[in-house]
Structures are given as structure tokens and as C-alpha cells.
Image 1 (cartoon, rainbow, N blue to C red):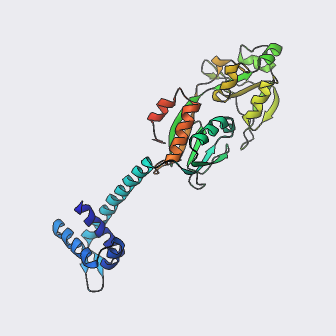
Image 2 (cartoon, rainbow, N blue to C red):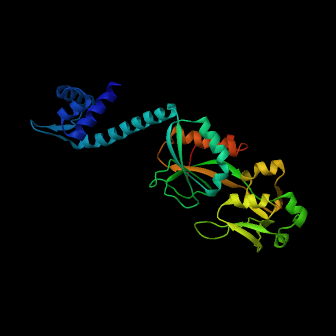
Image 3 (spheres, rainbow, N blue to C red):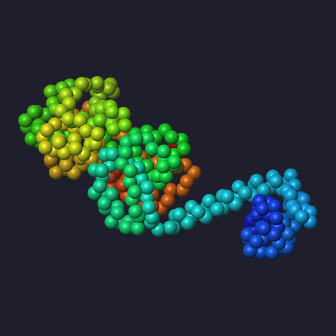
Length: 308
């Protein structure tokens, strides 16, 4: 430990170019700084400073040694910060960006707030591409692939798109058995707010994407009204399965054409690389993963952070 103490004294003296200022910052006398530097030089067998009555300057060997010592001290400080984060109670303001469909997650978010009353949620519901660092988000949740190399990503769970309608609608209009039969049905479409484009219904057969022109009876820039209209028997909606899990369980909505829908998509949490995820962000990510995607929660916890 005496070696680490000497390294710290050396770095302070080198950075301030003053034994007196280094001693003031460390709470010791300038003579104690000088003696520590002399012992260090004796142990290393090289001079680290050129000394005069008015100033000190690093020797070439001292400059090289300073670079290494600064890295060592930075690593120690980072390790201490990580331990402090790991043991700290989750509390404070948590700034999160979530997709627009996340308003359907409000029961889970409400339960999280009850479980962690010391955390204040500040949620931005948006489908736009946010700048995680510039806009000051602690964590961002998104679906699909993550391609930003400045972010660390963690898979929270997987989901499928489902096409749903009410029993009353199917009693009146019939149940489609093939994707092409959707041309005879009322379709409730979701439009992306940022691009103005309609979300494609991910239909395929034998690995080939099916491009079917769907009759549209309503368009919305959020999923909630489409699900509500489907529950009222006004048409079919295509939505992530976790958004209608309760309705499918109680029978108010029925899923159709399951064999023709594409493979699962990924729901991710992202935060800046090089930054230890805070306790408040970690418990938020864990809680959403466990309650929205209980089947894949255990697997998601195994990958704490995957750099893109």
C-alpha cells in the first residue's frame, strides 16, 4: 500500500509541478512530499524530477512513468466507483426513453414505482432516434437491432407480432385462414409518427415475405387506439404480443394467422458505453424484463451488457 501512496504523491507533484501544492492537496507537508519522491526514485533507480530552488520539472523517465501511474490511479478510481454503485440504494431521478407503445406498459411501470418509491421516473415516450448522451438519458428501451457502437445493449426479452380481432368481429366477418384473405377484412393500421409510413404487417410464407395490400379502415400513430378499436369489433390490429397478452388470455381478443408471422423481435435496453449502469437504471431494466418477458428474463440477466 505504501507503493500506491508514493505513486499518488508522485502524480500530484507531477500534475501541479509543485511539492508545496501537492502537499496542500494531500494534507501533508512539502517536505513529506519531497521525502516520498526521493524514496520512490531510490526504489526505481532513476530521477523523476529536475529540481531547482524555484521549480520542478519532469525528467523524460518521469514523464513516461507519469503516464503509466495516471492509468493505474484511474483504474483504481473506476473500480471503487463500480463498487460504490453496486452497493448504493437505487434512488433519484431516472431519465428514460421508451417507444410510444410503452404506454400500454403503464401497469408494470406503476408497479415499479410502488416497488421503488425513491426513484423518480422521467419518461420520454417517442419512436424517434434519440441521442442518448447529448439528451442525458440514463437508459433507452427500443425494439429491433442496435447499431450504435457508442452504446452498450442488453436484451430484455423477445416478442412476436400478432394479428388480433374480437370474437364478435370474427363471428360477423369470418376467420382468415390464409394471409391473402386479409384483403377481405377491415385492417387497423399503425403509422410511424417520425416517417409517416405505415408499419408493415410481418407476413411471410416459406421464408418469403408477403406484400399484401391491406384494406384500411383506420390509421393511428399509437398502438393503444388500434387495440381498443379491435376490442370493439371494428377490425384487425397487428401488435406486439405482450401488448395484448391480457386480452388474449381473457378472450376479448383472438390471435389469427400465427404460422404466417415473422420470427421474434428483440426488446433492448441501451446506455452509453464506458459508463457503469446505475443502480436505479439496473433495477428498472431488470423489473421490466421480468414482468414483460418472464419466459426470457433469466436468459436476459445473463448478458449484463453487450457492446454493439
